[in-house]
Amino acid sequence: MAFLDFRGGSGRVQIVSKRRATCGRHSWSPRVGACVRRTHLVRKRALLGGSNKPRLHVGSGAMEGAMQTESKIRADSRTEPGPRGPGCSLRHFACEQNLLSRPDGSASFLQGDTSVLAGVYGPAEVKISKEIFNKATLEVILRPKTGLPGVAEKSRERLIRNTCEAVVLGALHPRTSITVVLQVVSDAGSLLACCLNAACMALVDAGVPMRALFCGVTCALDSDGTLMLDPTAKQEKEARAVLTFALDSVERKLLMSTTKGLYSDAELQQCLAAAQTASTHVFRFYRESLQRRYSKS
Amino acid sequence: MSFRTVEPLEYYRRFLKENCRPDGRELGEFRTTTVNVGSIGTADGSSLVKLGNTTVICGIKAEFGAPPTDAPDKGYVVPNVDLSPLCSWRFRSGPPGEEAQVASQFIADVIENSQIIQKEDLCISSGKLAWVLYCDLICLNHDGNILDACTFALLAALKNVQLPEVTINEETALAEVNLKKKSYLNIRTHPVATSFAVFDDTLLIVDPTEEEEHLATGTLTVVMDEEGKLCCLHKPGGSGLTGAKLQDCMSRAVTRHKEVKKLMDEVFKSMKPK
Figure 1 (tube, one colour):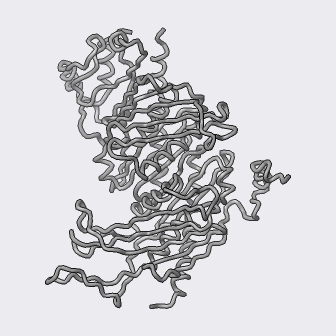
Figure 2: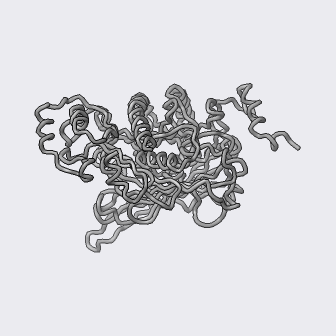
Figure 3: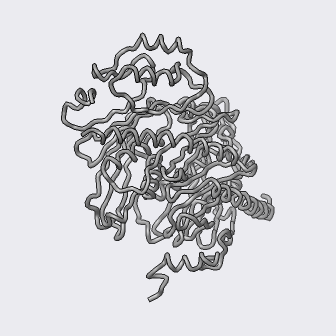
C-alpha cells in the first residue's frame, strides 16, 4: 500500500480511512503523502452539477492510490461543502487506530470538526474495593477540552460506561479492570456520539472481547420538525431537541439514549428509525476501516 | 440459607414467570405514592415524596443573585441531589459520588428541557438582580427508583414555593423585600418521570426497587409532560430495546402522568390557602 510507506515511518501500523476534506478542495494524496489542492477535480465536480439529493456521508476508506477511483468517488458525493440540505446526511468521518504506544488500544475518531481521542487499558489489575468476582470492572474517564471535569462529564461517563458494559464480554475476564480514557480534542457538535464511536474503535484495537460493536448517532429536531443527523454545534444550539442514541451492530437495538429538549413520541420513533439507517453506514465504515488495517500483510 | 440470598436472580425469575414480583405487585404497577407539601417552615417551598420505601425530601430556598452576563433577564434554578450514607449502605460520606452527580445532572436536564418555569419569571431587574432557586433534594431512604421520586418531589416543591415581592428603590438602588405579599411561581408544565428496569434483555418492569435495579440488565427513564411530549428519554446503556418496546413504555408513562397529576391536584386542593 503506497501511502502506508509514507505514514508508517515509525513502524507502527496506521490506517487512515479518510473521506474528502470538508473544504472540498484539498484531499489526501497517497503519492505525495500530504493534502494537496485538487483544482481540476473541483472544476470537474462543478461540471457534474451535483445532485441535490441528500446522501449519507461515510468515510469510504477507498483511498488507495488510483486517481480514477478518487474521481469516481467524488462523482458520487455531494458538491458543496457548505450548509447541508434538509434530510439525513452525516458529516465526513475518519478514524485512526493504534496511534498511542502506552495504552493497550487507542483510536481517534473525527466527525466533521469534532474529534475525540480514546485510549483503552485492559484487562488489567483492579483495586480490591472495585473488583467484581465474576466479571470485569469497566471504568470510563472523560476529559473535557478545557477545564476540570464536572458533573456533566460524570453523567456522560456513566452513559458511555453502561453502553460499553452491555457489549463487552466481562465474564471472560473476572476480577480485572478495563479503563477507557476519552480526551475531547475539539467539539463542533455531536460530541457524545463521537465519544462512543472512538470508545468502540479503541476497544476493538485493544482486543477486548465484545458481543457486538456499537455506534453513536445524534439527531436534531428544529422548530418546524425537520430532522438533521449529526448536527454541528450551531445546529444543536438552534434545534428544539437533540437526541443521541447508541445502537448495537447485531440488531440495531437501542443501547443508550439521552435527549435534550421537548419532542413528541412520533418524532422519537422517526429519529430512532433515521438513526438506525445512519448506523448501517457507520458500521460499514468500521468494517472497511478494520478490513483495510488487517489486510496488510 | 435462604434461596433469595444465594440465587437472587433465579428467585426473581420464578416470580416474573408468573407475571408478578416478590412484593406482590404486577409488572406494570407502581408502589404506593404519598406526597406531603410545605412541611419545612424555614424553606420557601418544600415537599416530601414516598414511593413505597424510597423517600425523598425537597427543600427550595430562594436567594438573590446577579443574572448571567449572557442572559441578563434570566434567573437560576440550581438542583442538587444528596445521597448520604443515611439512605443506603452503598454511599459513603464525603464529596458526592457518581450516582448523586448523575441524578443531579438528570434533574438539571429535566428542568432545562421541560421549561417547568420560565427563567425570565425569576428576574427582578434585568442585568442586576434575579432570584436563584436552590433546590436541595435529599434522599432519606433509597429503595430504588430515585429519579422518579426526585422529579416528583421537585415538581411538588416548586408548586409550593412562594416568593415575596421585591421592588428596587430608585433612590438607593437597593432591593426592598415585602414579606407580607407573596406569590406562587408560574409552573408551566408538569413533567413526570417513569422508570423501567429491563430484565434478561426482554422483560420490562415498572418502578424497580433497589434489589431489582441491581439485578436488572438495564434501566430506562421516560419524562413526560401533560401534552404527551417527552422531556427526557434517559437510557444509560444496558441491554438493547426495540422501537416496539419503547412504544409500550411511552403508553405506561402516559398513564403514570395521569395518576401523578391527580394526586398532585388533590394535595394542593386540600392545602389551606394562606
